[in-house]
Length: 510
Image 1: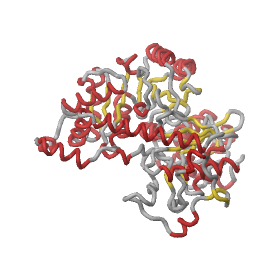
Image 2: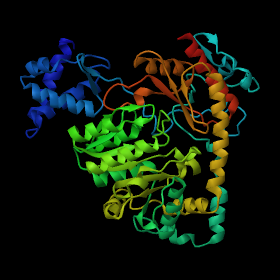
Image 3: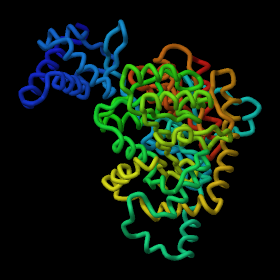
Image 4: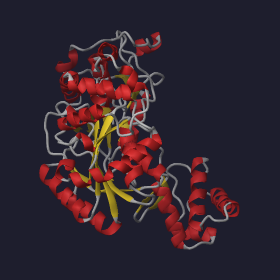
């Protein structure tokens, strides 16, 4: 037995404690809870190999099937992962890269809202392995500046995507426009959970930007894309239901599924996204109830599903009666348009049209487009969770989507993203980098085994830069490839250049 004898004794003791304290608890639930306790308390440490199913069954005097169910539950909770022929291991904890920026965002020493680093940090700048970081090539030389401090104490967060927020429309100007119009007091009272009619009309116009024609009657106003996703999961699925996802997927989906007791089933993906034949196999063998996708600008790999593959996935979902959840929040950063899956199968699709990436995260408005037969259930969940999305914020979102502000901001952000991507491709030339011309982030493929992504992220953190390694996005086991997502949406191009130089320095010394 690989885990230490003391850990095995503690695991057995906690298993017995749970059986004694919870008379209705099943044996497998008690085993799973004991494992979770030992992992959370550090008795079982990340990377440690757990007993085989048979060894743990003998230790606890239970059946192998009981242990199998317990290990399946801890894997669902992302506490353990199993490898065929190698055993079950405690997983390494990963950061929640999509909740909020864990560290203060460095905006550059000459920005009006920046905080100066210490003089020591300023003089040291950024080094890699004790040596100065590699200098950029000719395309970035003009951006050199010696006074750009960031360090492990005040890191630059390039793991959390803040899409060029300095280009967001002015809240003050928007609110002044609304104030001049008058009639704001009505927004201070309760409204229907689905939102005011004019706000739903604005949502239909916004969905059209994604290529989805939809009636305002099929639109609900939510408090951001995360709330829209929670609304769908809580309304249309029951505990134990299985939802198919790409092997690398949105980290908060995993968190929401865990809290709602839903099971995520990773489906094989390639450079073009989810593979239809793999989805069909999962539907046939795993009783899949839902499919979650980011088809046009996948987070984190930037892959885009070809149109033929979209039709194939829709056909499979119809064949097996699968609900489609389409959450393509970064699609508007790109010029290219392909028909959303929700357009191909409107009768079984929920489409989340977020405004955060264009108009500002603080607005917290997203529109949820769904067929009529799901409207009541979705509205009921909105009523039970937040009563309604804030009408004043929805009014502001409707203003900006209707008066051309959103389109102007989107053009400006694409232009800024294009410059940032040129910079990334220039400085990281020679490395395996996936970019889109106007994407808000890039995907750095790393050589070696799965551990390489975590090692690279650790080295970057030591140099004062946070990136999101592939483990943050992995579903149901280790990441399918080693890589790191690098956010590009900084205001100061010189800061971005220096950070990319540091990352290049780390890669060169690997």
